[in-house]
Image (cartoon, rainbow, N blue to C red; front, side):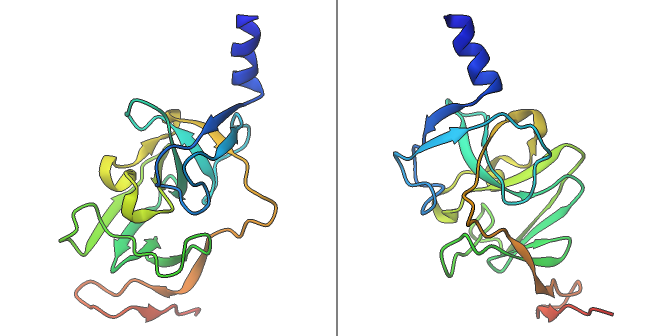
Length: 172
């Protein structure tokens, strides 16, 4: 029986209970989630269960993929200098660097590194605190609902170095 339980958790999945407020409003504390083994490549917007170095596993959302430059600037997330629009977040969500007196932070992701953030950015201990996450630390994926709206790139890019105004993306 014990081997059957271990095999089912490895190959079928498991149910976990969300603790803490880092993924609100999508996953409030006490929510039971199904965590499935990862059988396809990880994508931006996936909700994953990962070993963040704490006592228990954490539930976070993948924002940055391997090889990307993720910048937090003036409350917004930029991927390779392009604005990331995250429709699953509550309106007016401000993504600040871990040090609140800093206005910007940059993460350059290596091969097999991901940047993860909680949806409730004010209360989330995530990659802003402990840095990019190695792929081997991501244990399972939480299936997203059918009506989920993925993040997409907005029509703005980061300003040139030394400038302070976000500019529209030139499509030339």
